[in-house]
Amino acid sequence: EVHLVESGGGLVQPGGSLRLSCAASGFTFSNFAMNWVRQAPGKGLEWVSYVSSYSTTIYHADSVKGRFTISRDNAKDSLDLQVNSLRDEDTAVYYCARDLHGTYDGSNYYPGAFDIWGQGIMVTVSS
Amino acid sequence: QSVLTQPPSASGTPGQRVTISCSGSSSNIGSNYVHWYQQLPGTAPKLLIYRNNQRPSGVPDRFSGSKSGTSASLAISGLRSEDETDYYCVAWDDILSGMVFGGGTKLTVL
Image (tube, rainbow over all chains, first blue to last red; front, side, top):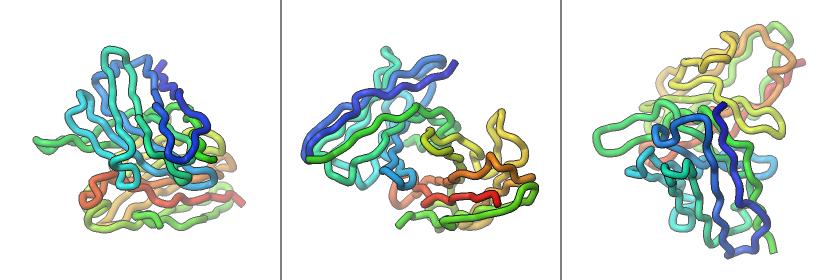
């Protein structure tokens, strides 16, 4: 069965850092691009980051650019999100999600739909 | 303020057909695919429709999607009580170079 399991969340002070991880199983991880999506308490979904299957294309939302870094290790079937300089507004449940039917324009890959999601991990930024 | 605009709420009675709209611009919906998600309380979102109108396996054919110009719609026919939850649209935005979600629509089954 296909599974994504996030870990690494918790309570952190403003300005602090965390490393979120997502362990994949049940599919060939290196065949799929991956994403991080977050949801603040009581709010809607917000896309955070994308990495193509062999990390040749990476995107980050403007709200996290320069502070968050997505990476993956295909040998370990794992996806990471390094989150630095955390702010109150980064408080959210963070989901990793597998990418389905993305596109390629000859230079860059682009996200498709997110067909498999993890259960989510909570990150709370508070003093 | 979300880049894609959805009505915050929608409603219908059991058996009825309801539609949820998602309005964008030429840089997102107008030039890229739209995908739809259903999110039950306390759970991860579930993919309902991808590439404007394609249903993943296991999604009932009561759910359908369409796109015209810079707007997209999710239609749910034969409304059931279990359809009462939140729905989100999303698309790639060429200017922002990122995926943009709608603000979500809470569907109530009366």
